[in-house]
Amino acid sequence: MRTSGRFAGVTIDCRDPRKLADFWSAVLGGRVTESLPGWRRVTVDDGLPVLTFQPVPEPKIGKTRLHLDVAVPDAGEAVDRIEALGGRWTGERHDYPEGTVLVMTDPETNEFCIVQYYNAVSDRLAD
View 1 (cartoon, rainbow, N blue to C red):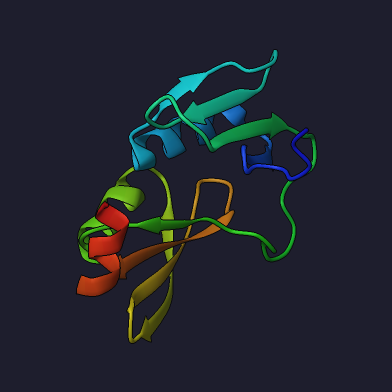
View 2: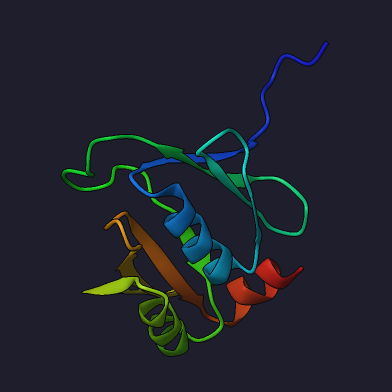
């Protein structure tokens, strides 16, 4: 019997699941499906983990306590693409020995980070 869990996905509460699923599908190159009536799911490469968007009536208030990190080959290009899709760069940038992190928001102001890793780390992520 398996006693440990496995990471299956992340569910994001939102007011417009269709809009956010379309946004995240474009950012990640995924496919959108309806998982339950009114809900949307984004699957990348027909695998796990998945992003699920659950409709809720209330707007987001305050800072997101959990966020996604999205590895990109070029942070500047990623900012331009995400902004064209309806996201926004917060102006917050962090430079670390392993790479650069830019804090972004999706169309409902959920924070996430785009990360441009430097050579050694990006080579491991590509494997």
